Length: 327
Image (tube, rainbow, N blue to C red; front, side, top):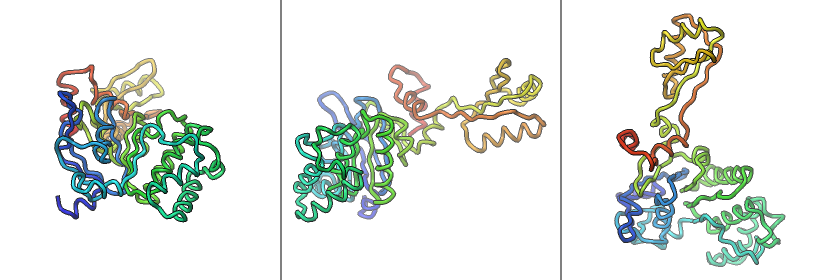
């Protein structure tokens, strides 16, 4: 790997592998994550997500493979990697007996910041995360959402350029989860930070991630944008509703593969939801002078992608073929 490539990418990994005895946790995975983006790693429990984060954040070593994080070699320059990153785990790493401000000042001391700079940084982060009014309160009195915000604020004390967020919104209510999403978006848009996100909430990946990878049994089985992954899964369709049976009959004659519902006066035409597919349907209707009363497009969502690509109970050519096409 050239130095230019390593620097332009926030994280790269080639052939990353990890086993514990006979159990293969990571099976030769490759990653390329550009700077200033959000990358989401999805997978069932035990798929290897947390192990990936632990390796890339220098907490454990890989058995094989190579990786650069922040332009630094993971094995030869672990201290430089640690200086470039921040890690927010699944559970808030806070001292409940201290106040929010004291937690931040403690982290500043651990980062060896001068006292004045530490106080400035703590005050800035309290304002940014809307915790100023709670700065002198013990963390034990905080709600789940406040604890997660403070935990992320502590990660930012050292001004990392790459942040690993391991299931950052687990246990949060919908309002707190969306507030955390806005914070994450701001870190990327305003500060140019790179986010490596693992999550069990598929909507979270859909909302935040520039690219998504699906990990199953230690292997990357798919990677792409949310839309690219959704297009891998069959089941999308364009639904047309008509005002009368004659309209339905005329449209059904145009689309041999469509499924019709005579009672609801609807026609479901298989399609991937793309603009060309939609245009082809509308052109066919226009050319035949058939008018639909309503049109809706249904495409597979990330739940469909996740369940299909990690279908442990499923077997056979169907799922295997999808995994091959996703690579």
